[in-house]
View 1 (cartoon, rainbow, N blue to C red):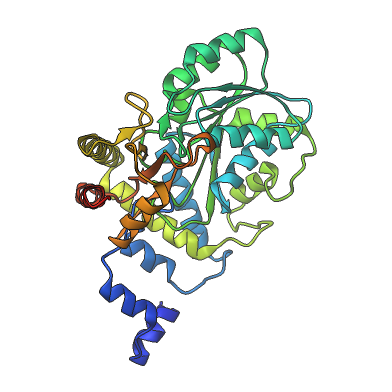
View 2 (cartoon, one colour):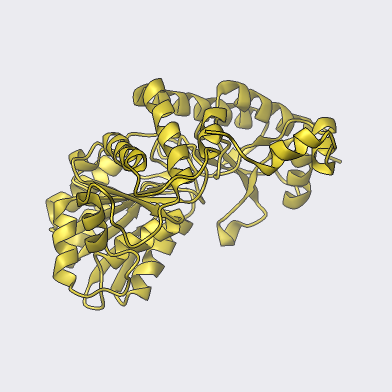
Amino acid sequence: MKTLGVCRAKEHTGVQTQEQAREQTSPRRLLMIPGPVPVAEPVLEAASRQVDSFTSQEFVEIFNRVADRLRSLFQTRGRVVVFPGSGTLAMEGAVANTVNASSRVLAVVNGKWGSAFASIAEVYGATVDVLAASPGKVVSAQEVADKLRQHRYDVVLTTHIDTATGAMAPMDEMAAAVRDNSDSLLVVDSVCSAGAVPEEMDAWGADVVVTASQKALAAPPGLSIVAFNERALQARRRLGKIGSFYLDWLHWTRVLDNPMRETHITHPVNLFYALDEALRLIMEEGPENRFRRHQQCAEALRAGLRGLGLGILTEEPFAAPTVTAVLYPQGVEDEAFRAQLKVRGLVVGPFAVPTMNGRGMRVGHMGNVQLADIEQTLGIIAEVLNHRV
Protein backbone atom coordinates (compact mmCIF):
# COMPACT_ATOMS: atom_id res chain seq x y z
CA MET A 1 0.00 0.00 0.00
CA LYS A 2 1.11 3.56 -0.66
CA THR A 3 2.59 5.28 2.38
CA LEU A 4 1.04 8.63 3.22
CA GLY A 5 2.41 11.17 5.69
CA VAL A 6 2.86 14.85 6.31
CA CYS A 7 6.61 14.52 6.80
CA ARG A 8 7.12 12.82 3.46
CA ALA A 9 4.87 15.36 1.78
CA LYS A 10 7.10 18.13 3.16
CA GLU A 11 10.19 16.36 1.87
CA HIS A 12 8.77 16.46 -1.65
CA THR A 13 8.25 20.23 -1.47
CA GLY A 14 12.00 20.83 -1.22
CA VAL A 15 11.38 23.25 1.65
CA GLN A 16 13.28 22.53 4.82
CA THR A 17 11.22 22.90 7.99
CA GLN A 18 12.63 24.48 11.14
CA GLU A 19 12.43 21.11 12.85
CA GLN A 20 14.45 19.44 10.07
CA ALA A 21 17.05 22.21 10.28
CA ARG A 22 17.41 21.72 14.03
CA GLU A 23 17.78 17.96 13.58
CA GLN A 24 20.67 18.49 11.18
CA THR A 25 22.61 20.74 13.60
CA SER A 26 21.84 18.98 16.90
CA PRO A 27 23.21 15.65 18.14
CA ARG A 28 21.19 12.49 17.55
CA ARG A 29 18.62 12.29 20.29
CA LEU A 30 19.06 9.25 22.50
CA LEU A 31 15.74 8.62 24.22
CA MET A 32 16.50 6.71 27.43
CA ILE A 33 13.32 7.34 29.40
CA PRO A 34 11.13 4.72 31.11
CA GLY A 35 8.80 4.71 28.10
CA PRO A 36 7.67 5.26 25.50
CA VAL A 37 10.76 3.88 23.83
CA PRO A 38 12.10 4.41 20.30
CA VAL A 39 10.69 1.92 17.82
CA ALA A 40 12.44 0.18 14.96
CA GLU A 41 12.04 1.44 11.41
CA PRO A 42 10.08 -1.66 10.27
CA VAL A 43 7.59 -0.96 13.06
CA LEU A 44 7.22 2.68 11.97
CA GLU A 45 6.74 1.56 8.38
CA ALA A 46 4.08 -0.93 9.43
CA ALA A 47 2.22 1.81 11.34
CA SER A 48 2.23 4.04 8.24
CA ARG A 49 0.29 1.59 6.08
CA GLN A 50 -3.01 2.79 4.69
CA VAL A 51 -5.97 2.27 7.03
CA ASP A 52 -8.09 -0.82 6.44
CA SER A 53 -11.42 -2.02 7.81
CA PHE A 54 -11.16 -3.60 11.25
CA THR A 55 -13.68 -6.21 10.10
CA SER A 56 -11.63 -7.22 7.04
CA GLN A 57 -10.22 -10.73 6.82
CA GLU A 58 -6.70 -9.29 6.68
CA PHE A 59 -7.16 -7.43 9.96
CA VAL A 60 -8.79 -10.45 11.61
CA GLU A 61 -5.66 -12.43 10.76
CA ILE A 62 -3.44 -9.71 12.28
CA PHE A 63 -5.69 -9.52 15.35
CA ASN A 64 -5.38 -13.29 15.86
CA ARG A 65 -1.64 -13.32 15.21
CA VAL A 66 -1.01 -10.53 17.74
CA ALA A 67 -3.01 -12.42 20.37
CA ASP A 68 -1.17 -15.66 19.64
CA ARG A 69 2.25 -13.99 19.89
CA LEU A 70 1.33 -12.28 23.14
CA ARG A 71 -0.02 -15.54 24.51
CA SER A 72 3.34 -17.13 23.72
CA LEU A 73 5.22 -14.24 25.32
CA PHE A 74 3.07 -14.44 28.46
CA GLN A 75 3.43 -18.24 28.46
CA THR A 76 -0.29 -18.75 28.94
CA ARG A 77 -3.17 -20.68 27.46
CA GLY A 78 -5.54 -17.95 28.63
CA ARG A 79 -7.27 -15.25 26.63
CA VAL A 80 -5.50 -12.09 25.50
CA VAL A 81 -7.36 -8.85 24.79
CA VAL A 82 -5.74 -5.87 23.05
CA PHE A 83 -7.65 -2.59 22.98
CA PRO A 84 -7.00 1.16 22.66
CA GLY A 85 -5.60 2.76 25.78
CA SER A 86 -2.63 3.07 28.10
CA GLY A 87 -1.15 0.69 30.62
CA THR A 88 -3.21 2.40 33.29
CA LEU A 89 -6.39 1.51 31.40
CA ALA A 90 -5.26 -2.11 31.27
CA MET A 91 -4.79 -1.98 35.06
CA GLU A 92 -8.24 -0.49 35.50
CA GLY A 93 -9.73 -3.17 33.26
CA ALA A 94 -8.20 -5.87 35.45
CA VAL A 95 -9.73 -4.28 38.54
CA ALA A 96 -13.12 -3.52 36.97
CA ASN A 97 -13.60 -7.18 36.09
CA THR A 98 -12.47 -8.71 39.39
CA VAL A 99 -13.41 -6.22 42.14
CA ASN A 100 -16.54 -4.55 43.48
CA ALA A 101 -17.69 -2.87 46.69
CA SER A 102 -17.84 -6.18 48.57
CA SER A 103 -14.27 -7.18 47.66
CA ARG A 104 -11.27 -7.16 49.94
CA VAL A 105 -8.01 -6.51 48.12
CA LEU A 106 -4.36 -6.80 49.11
CA ALA A 107 -2.15 -4.36 47.21
CA VAL A 108 1.56 -5.16 47.20
CA VAL A 109 3.31 -1.84 46.66
CA ASN A 110 6.93 -1.50 45.57
CA GLY A 111 6.58 2.02 44.18
CA LYS A 112 4.27 4.51 42.50
CA TRP A 113 2.47 2.06 40.24
CA GLY A 114 1.72 -0.36 43.05
CA SER A 115 0.08 2.58 44.81
CA ALA A 116 -1.84 3.41 41.63
CA PHE A 117 -3.18 -0.15 41.49
CA ALA A 118 -4.42 0.22 45.07
CA SER A 119 -6.08 3.55 44.23
CA ILE A 120 -7.91 2.05 41.25
CA ALA A 121 -9.31 -0.71 43.48
CA GLU A 122 -10.50 1.91 45.95
CA VAL A 123 -12.31 3.77 43.14
CA TYR A 124 -14.26 0.57 42.48
CA GLY A 125 -15.31 0.45 46.13
CA ALA A 126 -13.08 -2.34 47.39
CA THR A 127 -11.62 -2.49 50.88
CA VAL A 128 -7.88 -2.26 50.20
CA ASP A 129 -5.06 -3.28 52.53
CA VAL A 130 -1.59 -2.17 51.49
CA LEU A 131 1.73 -3.92 52.00
CA ALA A 132 4.36 -1.35 51.03
CA ALA A 133 8.14 -1.38 50.75
CA SER A 134 10.36 1.65 51.18
CA PRO A 135 11.69 3.17 47.91
CA GLY A 136 14.18 0.83 46.29
CA LYS A 137 13.03 -2.20 48.26
CA VAL A 138 10.43 -4.87 47.55
CA VAL A 139 7.81 -6.53 49.70
CA SER A 140 8.97 -10.07 50.46
CA ALA A 141 7.01 -13.20 49.64
CA GLN A 142 7.05 -14.03 53.36
CA GLU A 143 5.32 -10.74 54.18
CA VAL A 144 2.65 -11.56 51.62
CA ALA A 145 2.21 -15.08 52.98
CA ASP A 146 1.87 -13.76 56.55
CA LYS A 147 -0.77 -11.25 55.49
CA LEU A 148 -2.74 -13.86 53.58
CA ARG A 149 -2.83 -16.08 56.67
CA GLN A 150 -4.30 -13.22 58.70
CA HIS A 151 -7.10 -12.26 56.32
CA ARG A 152 -8.99 -13.60 53.34
CA TYR A 153 -8.58 -11.51 50.19
CA ASP A 154 -10.52 -11.79 46.95
CA VAL A 155 -7.69 -10.28 44.89
CA VAL A 156 -3.98 -9.65 45.31
CA LEU A 157 -2.62 -6.81 43.16
CA THR A 158 1.10 -6.61 42.51
CA THR A 159 3.60 -5.06 40.11
CA HIS A 160 6.36 -7.06 38.46
CA ILE A 161 8.61 -4.03 37.81
CA ASP A 162 7.71 -0.64 39.24
CA THR A 163 8.67 2.01 36.70
CA ALA A 164 9.17 4.63 39.40
CA THR A 165 11.78 2.81 41.47
CA GLY A 166 13.21 0.21 39.09
CA ALA A 167 12.36 -2.46 41.66
CA MET A 168 11.57 -5.94 40.31
CA ALA A 169 9.57 -8.28 42.51
CA PRO A 170 10.51 -11.99 42.58
CA MET A 171 7.27 -13.02 40.90
CA ASP A 172 7.86 -16.76 41.18
CA GLU A 173 8.18 -16.46 44.98
CA MET A 174 5.38 -13.92 45.24
CA ALA A 175 2.99 -16.05 43.19
CA ALA A 176 3.85 -19.16 45.22
CA ALA A 177 3.05 -17.26 48.42
CA VAL A 178 -0.37 -16.30 47.05
CA ARG A 179 -1.09 -19.75 45.66
CA ASP A 180 0.00 -21.64 48.80
CA ASN A 181 -1.77 -19.44 51.33
CA SER A 182 -5.02 -18.34 49.69
CA ASP A 183 -7.56 -18.76 46.94
CA SER A 184 -7.13 -15.08 45.94
CA LEU A 185 -6.95 -14.03 42.33
CA LEU A 186 -3.42 -12.83 41.49
CA VAL A 187 -3.35 -9.78 39.22
CA VAL A 188 0.06 -8.65 37.93
CA ASP A 189 1.05 -5.31 36.40
CA SER A 190 3.71 -6.21 33.82
CA VAL A 191 3.69 -2.89 31.96
CA CYS A 192 7.42 -2.34 32.52
CA SER A 193 8.49 -5.98 32.26
CA ALA A 194 6.68 -7.81 29.44
CA GLY A 195 9.07 -8.27 26.54
CA ALA A 196 12.20 -7.82 28.67
CA VAL A 197 11.92 -10.54 31.33
CA PRO A 198 10.06 -13.86 31.39
CA GLU A 199 6.34 -13.58 32.13
CA GLU A 200 5.42 -17.11 33.20
CA MET A 201 1.74 -16.50 33.75
CA ASP A 202 0.51 -20.09 33.88
CA ALA A 203 3.55 -21.47 35.72
CA TRP A 204 3.24 -18.73 38.34
CA GLY A 205 -0.46 -19.34 38.74
CA ALA A 206 -1.25 -15.70 37.93
CA ASP A 207 -4.84 -15.10 36.88
CA VAL A 208 -4.46 -11.72 35.14
CA VAL A 209 -1.40 -10.05 33.59
CA VAL A 210 -1.54 -6.58 32.07
CA THR A 211 0.88 -4.60 29.94
CA ALA A 212 1.01 -1.94 27.22
CA SER A 213 2.59 -1.52 23.82
CA GLN A 214 5.09 1.29 24.40
CA LYS A 215 7.72 -0.09 26.76
CA ALA A 216 9.70 -3.32 26.35
CA LEU A 217 7.46 -4.48 23.50
CA ALA A 218 8.88 -1.48 21.60
CA ALA A 219 5.75 -0.46 19.71
CA PRO A 220 4.10 2.99 19.65
CA PRO A 221 1.95 3.99 22.63
CA GLY A 222 -1.77 3.45 22.48
CA LEU A 223 -2.57 -0.23 23.08
CA SER A 224 -3.57 -1.83 26.39
CA ILE A 225 -3.03 -5.56 26.76
CA VAL A 226 -4.74 -7.89 29.23
CA ALA A 227 -4.28 -11.64 29.57
CA PHE A 228 -6.71 -13.50 31.82
CA ASN A 229 -7.47 -17.14 32.55
CA GLU A 230 -10.72 -19.00 33.04
CA ARG A 231 -10.64 -18.55 36.82
CA ALA A 232 -10.52 -14.78 36.36
CA LEU A 233 -13.34 -14.92 33.81
CA GLN A 234 -15.49 -16.89 36.25
CA ALA A 235 -14.79 -14.23 38.87
CA ARG A 236 -16.00 -11.62 36.40
CA ARG A 237 -19.23 -13.54 35.85
CA ARG A 238 -19.86 -13.75 39.59
CA LEU A 239 -19.71 -9.95 39.88
CA GLY A 240 -22.80 -9.55 37.70
CA LYS A 241 -23.20 -5.98 36.48
CA ILE A 242 -19.98 -3.94 36.63
CA GLY A 243 -19.27 -0.23 36.37
CA SER A 244 -17.79 -0.27 32.87
CA PHE A 245 -19.12 -1.05 29.41
CA TYR A 246 -15.88 -0.47 27.50
CA LEU A 247 -13.70 -2.70 29.71
CA ASP A 248 -16.13 -5.56 30.31
CA TRP A 249 -14.45 -8.90 29.61
CA LEU A 250 -17.82 -10.41 28.70
CA HIS A 251 -17.95 -8.08 25.71
CA TRP A 252 -14.36 -8.87 24.86
CA THR A 253 -14.77 -12.64 25.04
CA ARG A 254 -17.52 -12.33 22.42
CA VAL A 255 -15.07 -10.37 20.27
CA LEU A 256 -12.44 -13.06 20.69
CA ASP A 257 -14.91 -15.81 19.87
CA ASN A 258 -16.32 -14.14 16.74
CA PRO A 259 -14.11 -14.65 13.68
CA MET A 260 -15.34 -11.40 12.06
CA ARG A 261 -14.74 -9.40 15.24
CA GLU A 262 -18.16 -7.88 15.78
CA THR A 263 -16.99 -5.51 18.46
CA HIS A 264 -18.25 -2.64 20.60
CA ILE A 265 -15.28 -0.44 19.62
CA THR A 266 -13.33 0.57 16.52
CA HIS A 267 -9.92 -1.08 16.61
CA PRO A 268 -6.92 1.23 15.93
CA VAL A 269 -5.75 -0.80 12.98
CA ASN A 270 -2.46 1.04 12.41
CA LEU A 271 -1.38 0.47 16.00
CA PHE A 272 -2.12 -3.23 15.49
CA TYR A 273 0.04 -3.22 12.35
CA ALA A 274 2.87 -1.75 14.41
CA LEU A 275 2.47 -4.13 17.35
CA ASP A 276 2.28 -7.10 15.00
CA GLU A 277 5.62 -6.11 13.48
CA ALA A 278 7.19 -5.38 16.87
CA LEU A 279 6.17 -8.83 18.10
CA ARG A 280 7.54 -10.39 14.91
CA LEU A 281 10.90 -8.77 15.65
CA ILE A 282 10.79 -10.09 19.23
CA MET A 283 10.14 -13.62 18.00
CA GLU A 284 12.86 -13.24 15.37
CA GLU A 285 15.39 -12.21 18.00
CA GLY A 286 14.16 -14.95 20.31
CA PRO A 287 12.69 -14.17 23.74
CA GLU A 288 15.62 -15.72 25.63
CA ASN A 289 18.12 -13.69 23.61
CA ARG A 290 16.04 -10.59 24.23
CA PHE A 291 15.89 -11.20 27.97
CA ARG A 292 19.67 -11.75 28.04
CA ARG A 293 20.31 -8.53 26.11
CA HIS A 294 18.20 -6.52 28.54
CA GLN A 295 20.07 -7.95 31.50
CA GLN A 296 23.47 -7.27 29.92
CA CYS A 297 22.53 -3.67 29.13
CA ALA A 298 21.23 -3.10 32.66
CA GLU A 299 24.37 -4.52 34.26
CA ALA A 300 26.64 -2.48 31.98
CA LEU A 301 24.73 0.71 32.72
CA ARG A 302 24.77 0.28 36.48
CA ALA A 303 28.43 -0.66 36.56
CA GLY A 304 29.24 2.45 34.55
CA LEU A 305 27.09 4.69 36.73
CA ARG A 306 28.80 3.46 39.88
CA GLY A 307 32.14 4.10 38.24
CA LEU A 308 31.07 7.72 37.74
CA GLY A 309 30.20 8.09 41.41
CA LEU A 310 26.44 7.84 40.99
CA GLY A 311 24.24 5.71 43.23
CA ILE A 312 21.52 3.18 42.40
CA LEU A 313 18.24 3.34 44.30
CA THR A 314 17.35 -0.33 43.89
CA GLU A 315 20.25 -2.75 44.28
CA GLU A 316 20.58 -6.37 43.16
CA PRO A 317 18.89 -8.79 43.18
CA PHE A 318 15.82 -6.59 42.80
CA ALA A 319 17.18 -4.09 40.24
CA ALA A 320 15.15 -4.28 37.04
CA PRO A 321 16.54 -4.97 33.55
CA THR A 322 14.32 -2.22 32.10
CA VAL A 323 14.78 0.96 34.17
CA THR A 324 17.24 2.28 36.74
CA ALA A 325 16.57 5.00 39.33
CA VAL A 326 19.89 6.85 39.66
CA LEU A 327 20.93 8.85 42.76
CA TYR A 328 22.94 12.04 42.26
CA PRO A 329 26.07 12.83 44.22
CA GLN A 330 25.91 15.88 46.49
CA GLY A 331 25.75 19.20 44.66
CA VAL A 332 23.88 18.07 41.52
CA GLU A 333 20.78 20.12 40.70
CA ASP A 334 18.32 17.83 38.97
CA GLU A 335 16.64 19.99 36.33
CA ALA A 336 19.88 21.72 35.31
CA PHE A 337 21.69 18.38 35.08
CA ARG A 338 19.03 16.77 32.90
CA ALA A 339 18.86 19.89 30.76
CA GLN A 340 22.60 19.60 30.07
CA LEU A 341 22.16 15.96 29.15
CA LYS A 342 19.42 16.93 26.71
CA VAL A 343 21.60 19.59 25.08
CA ARG A 344 24.08 16.80 24.33
CA GLY A 345 21.36 14.56 22.91
CA LEU A 346 20.46 12.36 25.90
CA VAL A 347 16.90 12.42 27.27
CA VAL A 348 16.29 10.73 30.63
CA GLY A 349 13.38 10.85 33.05
CA PRO A 350 12.95 12.60 36.40
CA PHE A 351 12.41 10.72 39.64
CA ALA A 352 8.81 9.62 40.18
CA VAL A 353 8.95 9.02 43.93
CA PRO A 354 7.34 12.11 45.52
CA THR A 355 9.46 11.93 48.67
CA MET A 356 12.64 11.80 46.57
CA ASN A 357 11.96 14.26 43.77
CA GLY A 358 15.09 16.11 42.70
CA ARG A 359 17.46 13.55 44.21
CA GLY A 360 18.04 11.60 41.03
CA MET A 361 16.94 10.63 37.54
CA ARG A 362 15.58 7.54 35.85
CA VAL A 363 17.28 5.91 32.89
CA GLY A 364 15.17 3.56 30.79
CA HIS A 365 16.95 0.73 28.98
CA MET A 366 14.31 -1.42 27.37
CA GLY A 367 12.91 -2.37 24.00
CA ASN A 368 15.54 -2.08 21.27
CA VAL A 369 18.34 -0.78 23.52
CA GLN A 370 21.83 -2.06 22.68
CA LEU A 371 25.17 -1.96 24.50
CA ALA A 372 26.25 0.83 22.14
CA ASP A 373 23.36 2.95 23.48
CA ILE A 374 24.49 2.26 27.03
CA GLU A 375 28.04 3.29 26.16
CA GLN A 376 26.81 6.52 24.58
CA THR A 377 24.55 7.23 27.57
CA LEU A 378 27.42 6.79 30.02
CA GLY A 379 29.69 8.96 27.88
CA ILE A 380 27.22 11.86 27.89
CA ILE A 381 26.58 11.56 31.64
CA ALA A 382 30.34 11.55 32.28
CA GLU A 383 30.79 14.64 30.12
CA VAL A 384 28.15 16.60 32.01
CA LEU A 385 29.49 15.48 35.40
CA ASN A 386 32.99 16.61 34.41
CA HIS A 387 31.71 19.99 33.23
CA ARG A 388 29.76 20.77 36.41
CA VAL A 389 30.70 23.97 38.14
